[in-house]
Image 1 (cartoon, rainbow, N blue to C red):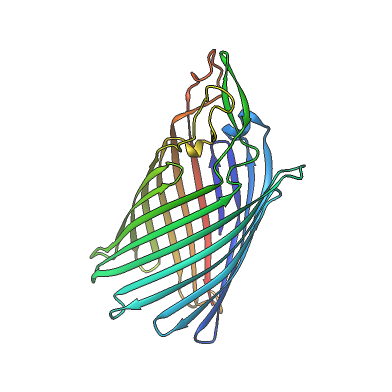
Image 2 (cartoon, rainbow, N blue to C red):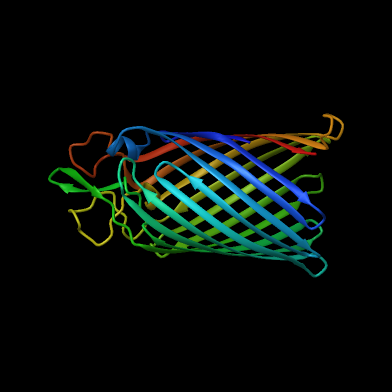
Length: 343
């Protein structure tokens, strides 16, 4: 797959390659390679720093074991940037019950991150743990329903060492390095339903609720429609809406330096909402179209996103009094082109 993102002063793109191979009747091996090439002049960068470019590479290896109606999976992922390193291991178990009408899945992952700074000996550690529980149920011959629960605990240096908050200084403002709590626990619950329509199409609905120990609460609503045309074409469209409240220690402008124990001005911790409109098309080549390839699938997806921030202001726009700048907002385009081969 080749992916691209453009919006809010950021341009991110790169390739993704996944390979999966069976090993006998009970095992399969998989691995992937993923690259993000980032060019950024976002609002945060333009306000306090200069534009930059960097590249993130990610590698993973995993194994799946099938025994009757149980699948056990395990894997390792490494992600590297010039100032950030992350290592993650995971294990999951999936089990079918009641004539394959019910599926229960359990998962656990553990991550070790190292946060650094360019041209500095600064180095801090982060430990992450993720607990997953999933349940899917066949309701009728045309309807599938699922519930997923994620609990994540983070401990260590959780803020960005380059990021600053701003505080009042007369009619203007000064800046200082952000201060975050060193622990965070978040919980997400998602409800999903998939319904098969009589003319070969399907519709998917999802609601997700998120809350964390920093005071953020978020709601996500998504609706997706998939429609095959003939034996080879599949078209899809989707709409997604997201909204969240701000963290307890967030402020666009603090009254003075060190006015409280924790202070952050990351716009992702503010009160904001966004929506996504997406369209996609896939074309499937059957066996025989290409020698030695059983199935070839080409897919193109395009999403348009628009973000609106309720209490984060654009400090790059001049204002005679700090805190009166216009509220920030931006839009973005996301494109993905993928090729899937089975042989």
